[in-house]
Length: 373
Ligand code: 5CA
Ligand code: ZN
Image (tube, rainbow, N blue to C red; front, side, top):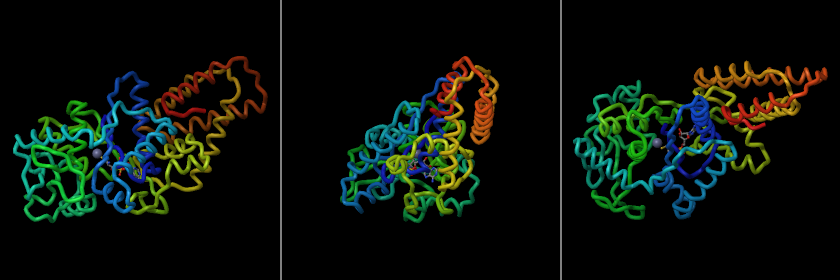
């Protein structure tokens, strides 16, 4: 599984967190069902938006990236995300990118515009099958997400930059193509194929990455490997705030680290972000936060006393919900119902002489859902 990681500025907002929590569930569920998983995530630690932010704030771009990566890692730990096997930065994988460019060049998929290198989308005959958008829609989204459809000298407006020649004041690395830095899409293609062989099981990220990013990776990956890059895309819905997608460019961000500093239990954030379905766009609100605090309290009270009954059926029902396209709303409703019944029984002081069932159930919830009570 390859999941697109952060660009380390303005991290980790609740949208990032929701996306990585969803893939954490896939990771945990796969492990719990006995699969071995190779999970790779990148960090886009050199790219236009990061450089622009560093310039705006007058800080070295390396320092900005380092501080944000460190925050991100602490946030992931607090949210009980099982780490991927590798977090790979663009800066440390530049030779992998230049190797990938060389291989693409051998297939005739690369051309030059001035000193920059472009990937020719017509080299992958499947390109149009990766998204249902019209050409006009693609061109407009491509421009919004860092593409340059109007650049003079390109063969097709959607051809994407894979090596950006050195410009005054920008970081650069030596390469057989002259000094420069990698384009965005080739970074993910090269890192994924270094660790995983095509077709990889899952190419993941938020739905904002479907086009152009994942389509470009799919096309480059197909030219490089001769087979499908990924068996499937998995795209998470967008977290919104005040009716708009939470995004760095809109600035309507809520940060995990700030909320943790305010004393909000990260387990409440985990529950809140997983209480909606991962594919649905969903809205963050104070109401969601307080409902999730109440929910966690309910579960904690129910789990605080010994229970000698059976929990097998509940665990099977939760597993069935998660295996049904990660139906966390249903899984959480099952835990709610069980907890309410349990608290009701406690109020009627039903005797119990074993703590085994509570231990078993807590370990299960922790393992499969990452919920520690
Ligand atoms: N570095 C690239 C991917 S290679 C990037 O998109 N970085 S990012 O920092 O902008 O986003 C990191 C991850 O969070 C991506 O998978 C993105 O799709 C996801 N994401 C961004 N905003 C939201 C949001 N509002 N809701 C859910 N997921 C989001
Ligand atoms: Zn990516």
